[in-house]
Image (tube, rainbow over all chains, first blue to last red):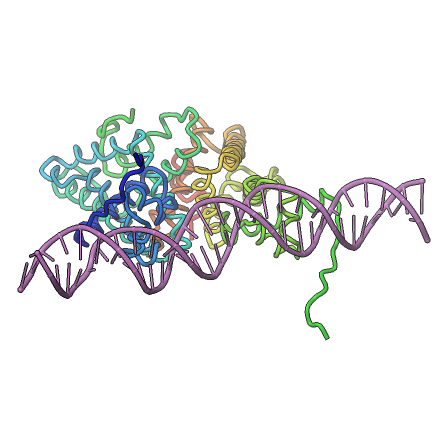
Length: 210
Length: 210
DNA sequence: TTGTCTATTGGTCGCACATCCAATAGCGTG
DNA sequence: CACGCTATTGGATGTGCGACCAATAGACAA
């Protein structure tokens, strides 16, 4: 009558296991924060013993970096899906900006905040954050460049405009963390306004933030 | 011939000791981060036993919150000194923006990053962060309002403009943490540009960012 | 000087963590 | 079916942390 579950041990091939671990850690990172990625915590979530995580990631920091990379690039893919490549750039940009609101994006901007701060103490993570920043910058720059080539946008330098956009989005995200007391539309809409002004679009061309 | 220092115990009055503790913690927060504020660490810095810190701050989180508050309000006072109240608003704003660059301000924006993130887990800190945000917002809003009254600025809503400025500054600060690879002037100067545009000033009226 | 009050000590306790390793058991191969 | 490889376990080790408390020794008043 033992009510405890048998510790039936499951054996998987290393790549699969590793991927599973990273995915779990990424999920934890998004939901609860990078500091919640702990050997024990991940192990428990996977129904496995802590030693195993340690075996795949002898140094914990490496797992944290990997998890952040997975989460960030996953979210980027969702914000700027390759599948949209055929759509007009204005439309893609409008979608992108539209997705930078709501609880879902709050989670993401919290993760960035988290990562930027933590990367102060963890070199491996810092490196990953830098790489992801570059990816996001390039992704958005490519979108803007498309728009310029198709004549939808007019801007002296798509790369600079992209960075400016990301800076504003980061600022909004950081503020959203603590302060959400009746933010005026002129604040919420900063990214839209910046994009329209910086790309020679008429006001409202990108849709209005909710 | 004992080369070890005598543990001569010094007795101070509670308010002074408490102030000393907060000041030390604030210094640590600015230089190394809020998570380095630890009973042992602060005690060592003060040449005192850890138990003493614990005595003044039975709950560690309270000290962290207090330290952040001290650091943030101290820095605000330096960025917007009351002593400048007689100067024209343009000049005060130009100074303020001028001080938002360089290693000194980097330290501060790192602290804000740190605090915003950590406040996710520590209610007492979150409350303090909210209070400080309000103070910064109000300080800057007052400056802008002065400018409007004296006819130096033209803006539909000083409060909104102030928030927008802070958002951009936060975004720049967050980005500066990891990425500083040749940031174009059009990025570095975002705050200046936003202020000039939002306040009806001619370009360059606030000085150029270095 | 003596006595009292209390700021300060010195230690203890329990917790959560990363890291390491010898033993074990799943699974594919022969 | 038996064997060997290795993914996985269980447990030990050491560190740093907040919290707690009885004992101690400054400082000040009587």
